[in-house]
Length: 78
Image (cartoon, rainbow, N blue to C red; front, side, top):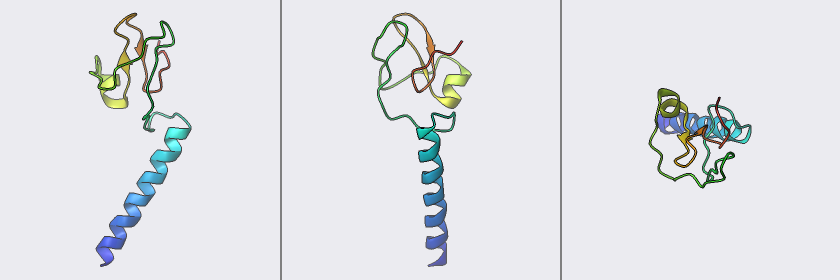
């Protein structure tokens, strides 16, 4: 019974941390909204294929139309 309570508290803390990080658009957050390219306005696919290590680790995509490198929130990465 105590293991169940301990795991429940750990999961609750993790959910709160990721929710706060997502609202502040930090690297640790999770974006569940659709992303549009700020350069050409193209809608990005829901299923993404990372093109580099940064996209693999932290999320993001490369725009198929203009080839802009975007983070998971749709901001251009230089």
